[in-house]
View 1: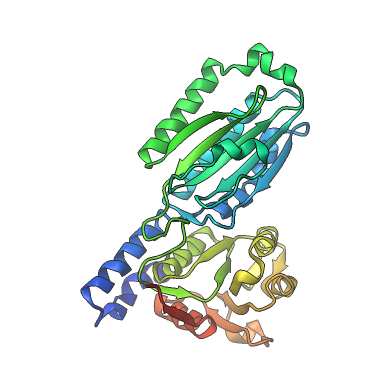
View 2: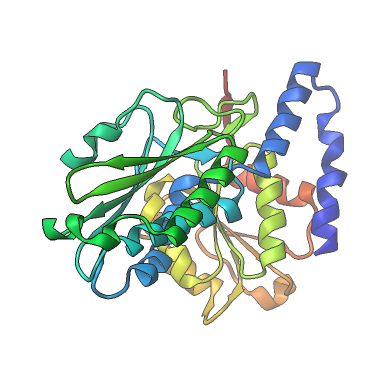
Length: 326
């Protein structure tokens, strides 16, 4: 792991010959990557946790906008905000109804008639946690009104959002329904839809990184994002298949450990072939090439531990970069 971590420093020779403006862009991009989180990915990955919060009697619906990408909120705090709002929503429901979680961008049309009042021109991403009652009688029940504990929880989330440069809004939608709306700042170097717009290479396709070791996954993701790649991560077969289902043919490269919990990397890649039919494949492992055996369909192999230069060199071969963003 240490050699992977140190490798980011070893790649510094690549900046030789860059203009001052390009240097500023590169370092802004690398810096922003630390707090640059894919909003849709976080919401999709949290669906199981949201369902656990809701319980068996409450429905859960997830609606992800393709117009929303990266927000300037660290992963742990974004998950705290999302699950906190879902817990607040659940506390206002009896034993029937539904929690709808939506992501929204500035250009999105209303998702359903009850959410039309949430449409704004504010250049921020939004997470909308909407409560749908199944009985209007619930609106008149005393427990419908926020109690002291709920008020404190919402106040803490509101303060957290303010520190992050966002805000919390509570929007009544009808006599019985309401929505909690978390307004989130887009990441530095993104346009008004949260897409990366800094002057670093825009890569042709998303990288799906499948790695069950958290530290290796985090450092590898950091290196790739710092050099302009869009990375989504998975730690096991289930999460990898979920990401593939969500992003499909947008995935241009699968980087997978050869040994994963309950499945081999090769077997998992075979299952990913249908949703990610055009993706190139790079296997990573601590085993020697002799133990890895034959690779098919143009797949490549990189042995751990590896340096940033080795990783980036292999990725550039498999996923050539497109023209620089203007």
